[in-house]
Image (tube, rainbow, N blue to C red; front, side, top):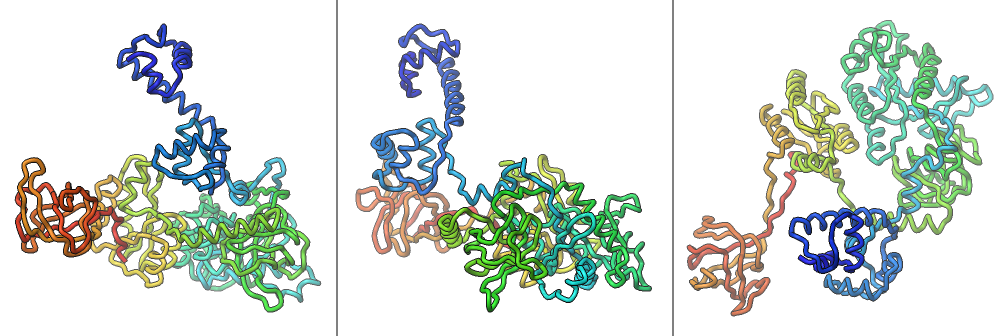
Length: 637
């Protein structure tokens, strides 16, 4: 082909094209020079690469919804030019109408630009916690106590709190706000008094990674219980360092060494046994070991180098929210970043307001609160859920805009897409998944170990099987909450599912697979990881027609003259031919006519001519048409 022809194909002026070719050292003399096919292909590839590089540099930030007029202004083009381009794509929009996001991105690319949606103020404030590294200063650690229900978490917290109060404050402990900040000679520590590990993980599922350190409380007289094991799995999945407090050492039947042995089996080998886990012997009754525990928490916090930007707009997490008779909605929050002040405009979930009152955990009114500090907030327009994040915005107008946008999104009710056996291979291929996380529940410890051993031996390139939690007994709510927060799959062997867990799994789109034979469990997991698991095809019925007459045409082949009995016949839809109730052919509707006209569909009660590419079709045969959807397999609940 000649140079000018190639220039035209690439949408370039011949002179400009010749200039670029010389820059790229292609020996061409004029626009009439001839280029062979191979060279032309190389030039096309080079120009494609060059164009993509240029486009990736030409970034234009826009906000949606976006009108055609605003779109043209942003790209520096005439609105009429954009309207013409839209017409070529059969999109009939005037300059005041909104342009679809995908369409706008495609047009921008065509014109040599990369369109980027401008991050909203709320996204900027939430995504970048420390807005200015030069302002980052150390902050106190936020500590959550976890463990079995009767192992003394609350008693331990009460002792720590009361022992740190001054004499004049001792009589006035009336506030119970779910979190306390204590002062030690070496620094402050914030403790969260959560009801259990499920709350901890539910908050994490909402994106509220609030805890810096977990204190695992284990009773010295009872040792590790199933709830202790669950707490360990939840803390490990969150990637939070664990400090162990072996409580109730004042009891005569206390066996701390037995507890240490049990902890070692959970991968929490104590430091005095040559392991990595800080383990402290304590008594919530006598106060023994409490000072050492606090010292160890501050030491762990120092290693974590916890920092916050004290000057940015405040950002934090809600622990709980309730209605107060005199004050209205009251939320307990922990400030994560910035300085939170009375008078600030605050947004949380789909509520907003101006801060009227801030109180600490002792009921004192504050003018401002700093990072890691728990406070009661009065000023939001309504109640909000635990785990929701709050942000301070510059003005009320901005707060209203954010809340309205959030309410719109809430109405859309997007179901989260979690990992499933049917989609895991595609996720691996798209490099969206580096770990395949599973939770295993089985009927006995022996079976549990056998399944774990076999799963660990499965080797698939670029993916690692990670067992988040394993346990004996029913699949419970705690398992589903952990799966939701960690994007994991639940595998059950000869176990039932608690109704509450089943309901939550359906709500959160968590897959629970139960098996009766170990081989089936292993085989299905292996097939899924290797991309060999057959997807489930769901057929959606469109219509049914009965064959009244068969025509053999020289050009069109065999055509069935039909009457549509139910629904409608649709051209290009999937179909099957039934004879006396038996399927004799499956294919696609290749042609559909109403009298002599080609049509896209024919409705119920009308006659039509149907071609399906089946020469043996007979009168009285039934043609059913349907759409096919690849479905993720239904939950085995």
